[in-house]
Image 1: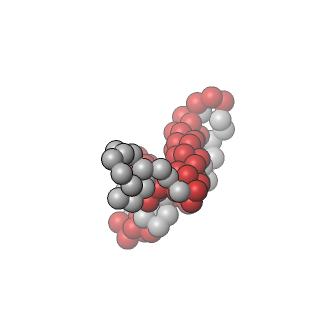
Image 2: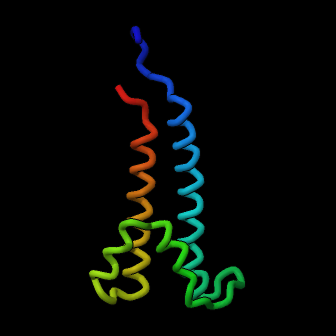
Length: 99
């Protein structure tokens, strides 16, 4: 490559970036459902399994929640938020063009 500052993404990197955007939106929605279910926001009924989607999206990091014991609802929500953010970062990092 000569002189250009930016490089183009390959087809696989574009697909991965698109997957990352969909994953980020799904993660955000899963995280919003938890307090919406607890407090009845938007007319959502209380559901004890509302956090399952966030736990699944935050894999493999949520396995550490079992090792930490009971951290409470807000501690679990904070951990899942951090785990989903870490997954989003990793997807974004792998979708960047290599130098």
